[in-house]
Image (tube, rainbow, N blue to C red; front, side):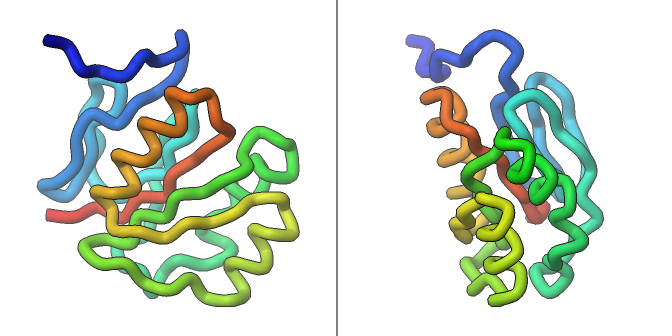
Length: 127
């Protein structure tokens, strides 16, 4: 039985994570990633301490353009609190943020994206 969520045409799903990378829409990507419904980009953040306003610039731009309303932040193996300046800058751009471990962020992204939500994921790679 196929349990793959119904995915609108042209939308990316996260198929797997671990071993220091991700499998997104049939392609393996090493390292951390920013994932939007229509694209995925390398994200040079290997540890939660490196999550900054600057590292989330493309998410902020997408929020200001009205194409992202929610960011799922995959913090690695454990949930970590989002620094207040990062949370405030995202809020100013119209983007809510939900931190969670990377696995939960991947699963939640797929569900929300399949529902047609304006969601993005910032995912720190885990081994």
